[in-house]
Image 1 (cartoon, rainbow, N blue to C red):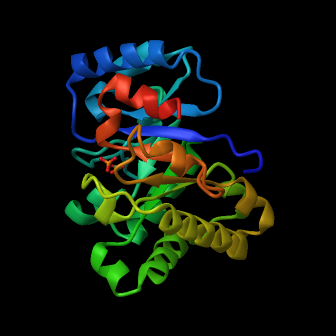
Image 2 (cartoon, rainbow, N blue to C red):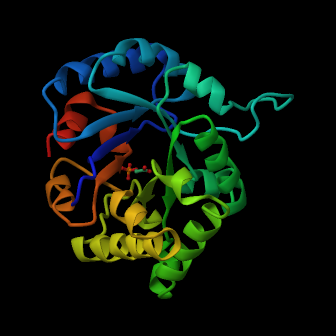
Amino acid sequence: MGNRRPLIAGNWKMYKTGSEAVETARQLVKLVEDVTNAEVMIAPPFTAISYVSDIVRNSRVSLGAQNLFWENEGAYTGEISSAMLVSAGCKYVIIGHSERRQYFGETDETVNKKIKAAIASKLIPILCVGESEKEREGKNTFSVLDKQVTNGLEGFLVNELETLVIAYEPIWAIGTGKTATSDQVQEVHLFLRSLAEKKNGNMLAKSIRILYGGSVKPDNVTELMGLPDVDGALVGGASLDAETFSKIVHY
Ligand code: PGA
């Protein structure tokens, strides 16, 4: 696995009020005090980020956001900029999650702009890619992923992508309890790493972290993390409970 430090990231989606988020973050900080084998990140909803930031400061838990807008500031009602996320304590930002593509009209082009904004602010982008069930059945998985990665990362210099994280999240495995098989996951992760090599060279391909997401649970994480090209997990449902998420972190 080279020197890639595993990342276990929790995506809380649209769950938890400020006080609920604080409570879970408090529990999690305690439960993962001893963890050294992986970096732990949680991405609360925007309204809880600042509160959670106070709780996780000087702990093993890093903070992320679930989205951003690419402009620095301006008349963009309802949007949040990368500078705002940095000042609220974020280190990571999830970009192009399939739910955002599906329900909020995100495209590879908007994803590209968001990644640019994140990198300019020194936030670590987590680019989410993944195929639908129909695309997999139609044997289009690799072409779909190729397009998402190629267009999402168009126009960057190799050194700008040094911190980039890619999350492979097959849409049919998100929140469904259906995890991709180890063979399916490893095959795709290897494909994504080869794609990174083809476009950005061997150094980046070796260092880039590729996470798997989609119904990751305490009972399947060990097998997933044992795969040679899996460098971590992006966890939705099972990250909402501190004890369950801590079990995943202690894979
Ligand atoms: P899930 O979600 O773990 O609930 O399947 C993963 C994600 O959407 O990031």
